Figure 1 (cartoon, one colour):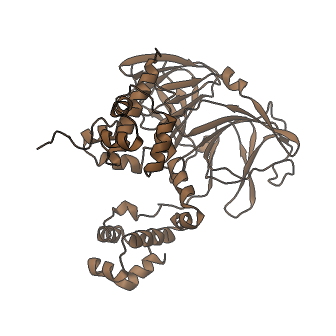
Figure 2: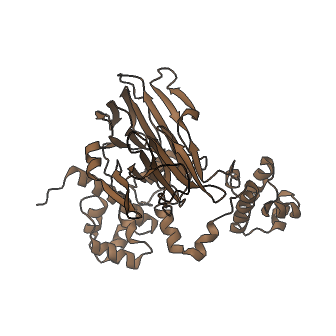
Figure 3: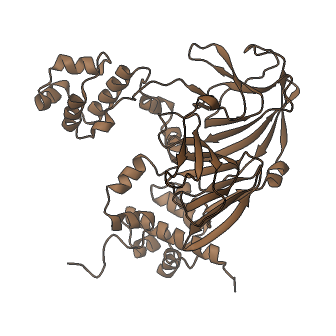
Length: 456
């Protein structure tokens, strides 16, 4: 008899709940699914109740008869059941690989803490190329073509950062320990160590996916370029951004200018001006327009500001504060960030308390942690009513799941990056519009959509 581990049991139960949700969405009772998939009702119930793993043959059959994809049957693997996943500096060093560019060693890459639960792809990179000037056109500098991931970079040592400015020209930023930058996807860039540095420069290249990653990217790929590109709206100015959003929602609702004028009393020519990106209406008018199209005001609001695609933040110019106010356990320095990614937040934490039992941090975002200091830091956390302790040594990195109560204690420095993943933002708003009990079902479905015995 096969012995099933507790972790596998948990995964089977999790899949069973998820599979029941698929059947509910397809409006199939277990008996209907069994008949259509040509298997017994007993086998269907074993899958739903977490006693048996679904076979690849059943999945293949299901994708042929139902409008679902293979990937709909594969859950995100939880490789972090205890809430925290740590990668030691020694383990990171074993992943070392030298990347050549232009026929010469250019970077040494190492992995740092990653989890299959999150969209982090963080890298430790040593700059093996040494430049003897700060010329952005230095021929020794080898540029990449940009990549799909967002990137927050934390600098350690004497590093030159090369990027393309808003004017399309090559630029160089002189970066030192604690400096940081944020770059949007697909921006060509490069890094090099400056001459006379005591040792090669390092960067933490913290790349990550956001709302365009995973299922969204898959959907765009399936729709294709011709049908997918109309989703790109012109956000090159605030006026154009409002006009594009107004046009998008107006057409989605199949509303003519005449009909919106009828509903709002706003002159047709004024509406055309709005849509042509010539004027941004007042917030009161935006609210009126939103109501006429049955959307929320926020759906029509343009960005507060049009940011540069590359944002550079020097450590000595960064805002800093103490947290919490009552204990001042941490001094926090805000690193480079984009207002267009409100759930992406980068910090440098200086740990100021040696020990106590208070869990003073709980964050609804995925967190990446790297010990950039010279001292060990104690990480304490609580999950499933169990308190856990571990140490982050210099060069160690960690991933922390959202909403885990935790603290850091000791005397050192951490680099912290928090990102939304798949939930924070619009998905969180959608979840929050449900009743609390219904939100529980959205997370883990345990009921059929109707009671076969009847319900009054």
